Length: 209
Length: 209
DNA sequence: GCTTCTTGTAGGGATAGCCCTACAGGGTTG
DNA sequence: CAACCCTGTAGGGCTATCCCTACAAGAAGC
Image (cartoon, rainbow over all chains, first blue to last red):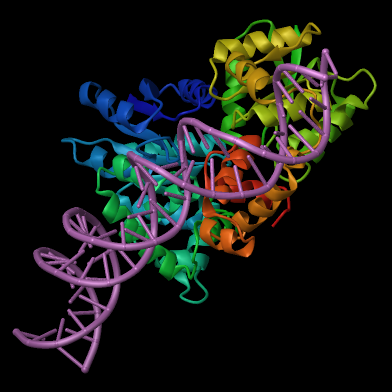
């Protein structure tokens, strides 16, 4: 029996996914969480083989939760479930240590299969996405500017685009606001932008928002 | 038996919702669609009492599909299911003729209840949202929020959206920066936004940029 | 005609954020 | 392996911006 923990902020979607997993006789949902903090807390007293993780959760988002999950002893495999099927995002998730990346567009049967695969220590990437990843990320030409951003810079970028201010970001990431300002300045230089307005525009045009 | 059609673009979410509805013995999913065109096509040969509609679908989006569903003879009731619990969006959906508006954050039991309610000819609005609607939106409005801006406010708005900072605007308009700040605060209140990021987003979504 | 709302203007004081600078660790490269 | 660049971190000090408040002129309601 494979034990699964579902981390996803939208209740309806979470319940739906639980139902879906319930259909498979070899899978069992043993817990759930609607944000990163809750997830880590739950993992402290619930054993499972797989965490099904939505990247776009409020507060400590899914991506950032990954290394913290893997820091536990005997950590579960992490299967990321994402809305936006950005190749960029998938690459980041895998780099952070996720065992797989599925999108909410894919076939439910594939999801169940993916859970089994990562539970067995394997890896899974949505086939459509894998395709695009070798195209967009693999070929060295014409990569978007935001591909040049470092991990930290990208986290700061995302939050700024969402309207989070420097101080709040500093709190979320447990850093000094000075540090956030530095990251902000550096990422803006990399993206050749001069104002927050342009940053948001950039994010929208590149469908990062 | 209440027959339901599920229109939602993300397959996993759609399947999850189908499972969820399957739990209720008085509800039956008789069809599904992953975009607006498919939805209208399906409705042409499938009878149902309720359409569960995701507004953020690609192509003909959910909102635009509403009047076209209601133009059918003997049209089903439409229950909108939304990710973002925007009061503004809910107001528009209801204006277009939806019978209800639920968010994916809400309790699954409420969703089932909402389906029954609209099937019986009633209306349903997510309680949290209803609260905010009476506060934020004067249900009657159809014209865009930015129509409420005064002349000065609009000039300031445009410049802010273009990335001009408060001081520069003050110079351009030969006013004190304090005055610009005041206009900014007032216009942001009118547009129900809390950050410059949202301001830019608003401008882009309304093609003002 | 008196009150209330909206708009344009701006000050005082507090805070957020920017600019410049710094330093350490890791990677790269000549 | 030394020099350099990139990244993550942050302090000091200055400026931009916000929040609250105020007031006058016109519009609007009653």
